[in-house]
Amino acid sequence: MRIITHTCSNCKTVIAGNVLEAKRVMECPGVECETVIRFDDLQVEDKEYFIKNKQDYEIN
Amino acid sequence: MKAIILAGGTGSRLRPITHTGPKQLIPVANKPVLEYAIEDLKNVEIREIGIVLGNSGCDEIQNLIGNGEEYGVDITYILQGNPLGLAHAVGCARDFVDGEDFVMYLGDNILKTGICDLVESFRNNTYGAGIAIQKVENPHRFGIVEVDSDGNIIELIEKPSDPATNLALIGIYVFSPVVFDAIDRLEPSSRGELEITDAIQYILDDGYKIDTHIVTGWWKDTGKPEDILEANRLILDDKNLEINGHIEDGAETYGRIELADSSIIEGGAVVRGPVSIAKHTTIKAGAYVGPYTSIGPNSVLRNTHIENSVVIGDSTITASGRIVDSLIGRHTNIKSSTNHLPEGRRLIVGERSHLKL
Ligand SMILES: [Zn+2]
Image (cartoon, rainbow over all chains, first blue to last red; front, side, top):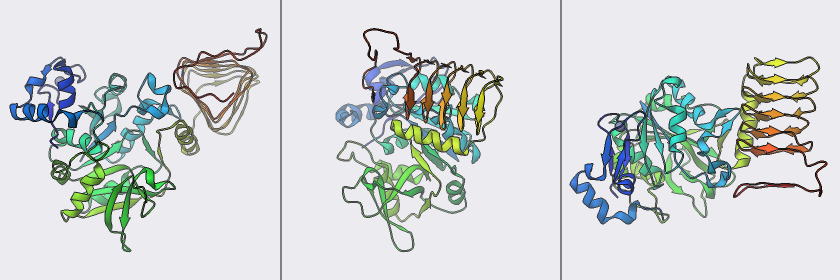
């Protein structure tokens, strides 16, 4: 199973794909960081993989 | 070397305490459990720490720890979100780790002896991974390792129904970056998680050496109320306790006591250590605070008898009965019902509370 993350370019906070997918658009949760992060920031290939295998990233 | 501390999880076995905050911030001897992990990592000269957060408790942890400056460390946050397993948490930290060796520390664990031996052994040799293990009485609840007569690991099994040994993986690991190659090959287990035991098994199968370190001192996973109380006892037994607050004439104190500088033990109160009393707390006349009790900040105790308990803080306890073996959440008021009619106990108790009356 692929582990998909996005790293904030400003503060290096890492956000897992399931968090990005749930929120779609969010302010970076890093301390005092206001960078806007989107599910769409993921690489196209990662995004497609995530959507195709969405059930693997959900809680049973 | 870097480190990641896993601070997710729902803390379901510690409800209702964890309704309002993550389990990793429950204080043991008046210090949040998570701070013990940061301290252990600092003691082995690790300053770059990633804290892996779950779906809840993120704000509370970030508000306390911030960027780590106050602790002399550099914190990066890693939002794992859904609890998809320890190996998923590690996998999420790949960018943060950036090719270095790293320690993985479960943020609700406390170890008496720290992690120096494990980390030093890993630094001085070439291992794929290093694991801390301990003999446990209930091995079916843990990841278990099977070893040969020379102590080399043969197999790792997560929560086996029929455990071959009682050697359990405890919550501290050291990994070289080869762990990511192993994690890349994992698929969710029957419980839907990426298991760290499976990742370590792959590292072993790939021909890397695994360092095993038997932890001889006590180790506590603080997942349940009784674990918090036991960890509190163990820490109070070991900790250097200092009196910086004020003990009035007429107060009786025995044994080792930690009293914060702004706190007072008033005349007519009895405190029998080992006890820890945090800031801005007053132990008033008629109160008895017995061994292995930690009273958090901004609290008042009067007329009550309490022992072997943890009061998290911001509480007032004036009931005249005996309170023992208790974990009392923040902003709690426990008063006497004497002279109130009809006679009886009056309770406003949160969801999933446990009371023995
Ligand atoms: Zn950021």
